[in-house]
Length: 417
Image (cartoon, helix red, strand yellow):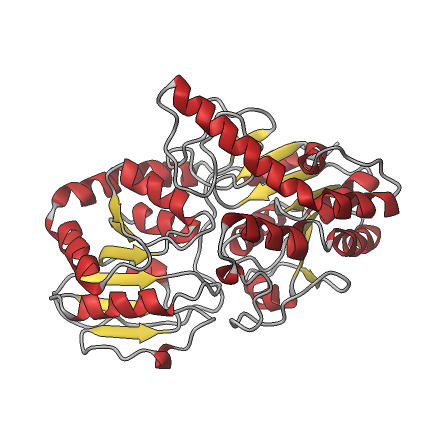
């Protein structure tokens, strides 16, 4: 039996996969402890996973739009988004995250620390205690540290020529440079832990013996084979604890399910456009707004139900189409059910996920400010042209195979000793 300390933060879709991995380890006889924001305690309790809240580090006690710490929807350019990540998660609070992680290490005595890939302070704490460290990324890799992968953020396809490879390398190097603004704060934290300074922010990731990608190899664009210490461990996806039972509207018309981020991205305008588009079509629509938006904010036509939450696992059994911002979980789960996607990405990893969908012919992408008429036309195409569903079923079958073979627990067991 070994002991595993997991560290994460309220960043949306990566919390549930980490809890599922912790649960799998506990089922194999190990002891686990999850360190995260207080608002994630109910999710941990639903999976019977021991939980401890951050005390010194920044925390979210709720999941409303007012609680959101990052507020990246207020940033008007990619550099501003990076600066928010640095100031509010990665390096600004690095010492606070390190102090809380050290306290948990001293109390729990883990054999391995498993961190979400942005918590540099937790990584430094594991390094200071000379504990094996693994990173668990519940999405495609988002940082500019993987050679051969398309640059993150803009929805770029794999390089098809030497010129494109050179352009990708240049964009990746520029992105890496932008992140160096957080290096002074990280080195201040490292000095407090009696660790030597780093010359590059991403050298902190070198403390990890394994970087586990909890996504599907069949879905991703990463190089083959993956460079060490990266490894695919398969997707970990499930309905969140806050999802409530819901029965979709009756009838034989195609069921169109709509879901955007569980975090706030100022998604009200795009949701209104989608609701208007579905109202003009012979479909049954179900829109889940998530914890940050009140369904009462929307006027819906008779054929569209707007609810805060519903178990997507149940809805997807009958869904003819899934309309989404293209977050990682909201992309893979419909594909695994064989449903084509209409993607309206709003930032983060969403343009990249949408590119992976459309490149395989499993859906269409529109800008997030698309008009209702354009959305309705795309919905008609996706429902009327069987090639989209065929492609979604093919890609979904490959993702399901990766899920069936998922092995994060085994990869983490290999780090003990």
